Image (cartoon, rainbow, N blue to C red):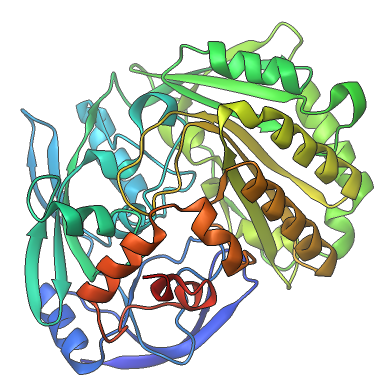
Amino acid sequence: MLWKTLTYTGWGRVAEATGPVARPERVSSLAAALADDAGPAIGNCRSYGDACLNDGRSAIKMVRLDRMVGFDPETGILEVEAGMPVGEIAKIFAPQGWLPAVMPGTGFATVGGCIANDVHGKNHHGAGSFGQHVAEITLMNGGKTQKVGPKKNAALFKATIGGLGQTGVIVSAKLQLLACKGDLMTVTERRIDGFDEFVEALDGSEATYTVGWIDATAKGDALGRGILEEGETGYGLVPAKKKSKSVPFNAPRFALSTPVVKMFNTAYFRRVPESGRTSVKPIQDFFFPLDAIHDWNKLYGKHGFIQFQCVVPPAQLDALKRMLEKIAHSGLASPLAVLKRMGSGSAGLMSFPMEGYTLAVDFRAGDKATKLIGQLEAMTAEAGGRVYLAKDATLQAKHLPSMYPNLAKFAAAANKADPEGHYETDLTRRLKIRSAS
C-alpha cells in the first residue's frame, strides 16, 4: 500500500493536518491500508473545521472507492461505495426519476461523509436526515467487515449514523432513493421583510424543498430580512448549464469588508421583485449553487473562514433572534447566511438535526469572529440547541453534553468498536468526545 505524506485542510481552511494518507482503489487495498496503519476515513474534506483532520497521524482518503455496486429500479435502492459524491448520484439518477432523499449544500460531499455527519438538506422538515434513508452500511473495522442496518446490529448502526467515523470505516451503503419528477427544478423566490415574517413563511411553506437566505447585516425593523426559495422537481427541457467559474487566488480583506457586504446583501435582496418570481433551473443549480464557483472558500482570504451553524427548538425563537441581532451589530457577517425549518427527524446518537430552526452564518476567520462565535455557542447551549459538528471549528467541549444528550452512550459504543482509538480525529480529540463514556 502506497502512503503519501500530505498537508490538507477542511473547507474552511482554519486548521490543517499533515500526515500519511492512503488512497485505496479497491476494498482489498482498503483492508491492506487499515492493516498497515489504521486511521480514520476521510472524503473530499468538505466539512468546514477539523472533523476530517488527523494531524500527525494517518488517514484513509476514500474518494477512489466511488463505484455503483447495484441499483433496483423497482424499489429505488442504490448500493454505492462510500467515496461516491452525492452530486454524482443526483446527476446520474435524476433523469431516471430518482434522487438521493437528502442532499447537503454541496454535491462534493461523499456518501460516507453524508452518513458520518447525518447531513440534512432543504427538505428536512419533510424527509428528515440522510441517515433515515440508509438501508444498510458495510463497515470495516479491525480486519473484519460487517453489515449494519436499522434492524441488523441496530445499536452499532445508530452509533455509525452521525458518528463522525468513530465506529469504523464506511465501505459502502444501500440508500433508499426518492422518486422525483425529473432533472430540473421549478423555483419560486419571494422577498421576506423581517425575522417574524420569515419564520411564518417557513412554517407555512408546503413546498418539498424550502430554504431562506438571510441578510445577516440588516438591523432594526429589517432584522432577518431575506429571500425564501421554494422548489419542486420537474421535467422538460433543462436550461443550458452555465460555465463554472473559479476563484484563482485568496481575496484581499476589503472584498468582505462591512460596507462591501452590506452593498452586496442589499443588491442580492432586491434582485427578486417585490411580487416574487418563478424560474426553472437545473437540479444542481438549486441544490448546490456554490459548487459552480470552484474554490469559493478563497473569497475569505488566506486565513479562511469559520461557519457558525446552530439549531434551536421552536420555543426558543427569541434566542435565535437575539443571535441575529448580535451578528448584525458585530459587522462581521459575510453574505452567506441561511435560515431553515427543521423537522424532528434524525437517525443517530450524535445526529445534529432536531425539530426547530437552524441558522448558518459564515465569518472570515479572526480573533473577533472566534469571540463572537463563542458567545453564539453559549447562547445556543442556553437555549437547549446544538451546534453542527460538521461545520464546527471552535466549540468548547463543556457545551457538548447538553447539546448532545446521547454523548455518553455514543462514546461507549465508539470505544467498544474502536478501543485503541484508531479512528479518532482532531475534532473528536478537541471536544473530548471519546472521553464522555
